[in-house]
Amino acid sequence: MTEPDELYTLRAQYWLGHYHMALEEAKSIARRPMNPNLKAEREEFLARAWIAQGHYDRVTATETPGLQALALKAQYEAATGNTAAQESILNQIKSLAAGGEASSVGLTAAQVLLVAGQTKEALQLVHASSRMEDMLVCLQIYLKLDRLDLAKKSLQKLKQKDEDSILCQLAGVYVHLASGSEGSADAVHS
Image (cartoon, rainbow, N blue to C red; front, top):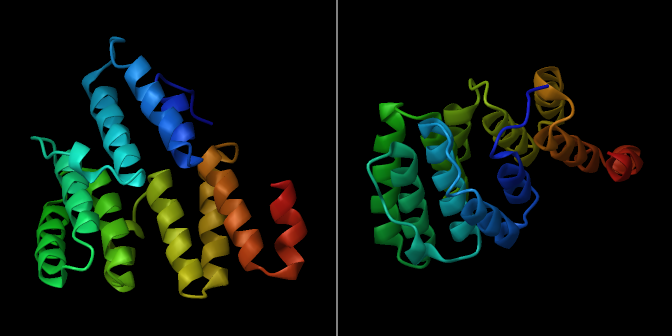
């Protein structure tokens, strides 16, 4: 298991869907000294929480590839109903993901591609990653494709990486629920 860092609570709040609490946590830790990687990750979680709440205008592109991808995601979601704009944004995010600069870009691009119905392309972006969030998205894609066998293998990989993590626990619930009546009791106790 990895040791918690300054962003543990922020990540947990976001992953559990407590977006307002994640925003509050991001604001409360903003003044703490932290290394540049954690600071960039905090900014990304802040942008992700704004997107989750539908505040697309609060997400602006900056020099970091992760935030550029999140800004494109916000634009994509804000352009609902405008097919031409969404297609243009899809092309931009695919180009950004092809650059392979930041792993969070692949995750964001995969989420946008899933919304756009491009499941195969989304899976290609996350299937080889060893990041837990990418592994969880891969598991969710397998469940979407009705490949419970592959989802169970992904769950085992997540458990090997960190069995106690929130993402692993959520993945277990998803797999148990997808298993139908045989897994429903396990999903409640996960």
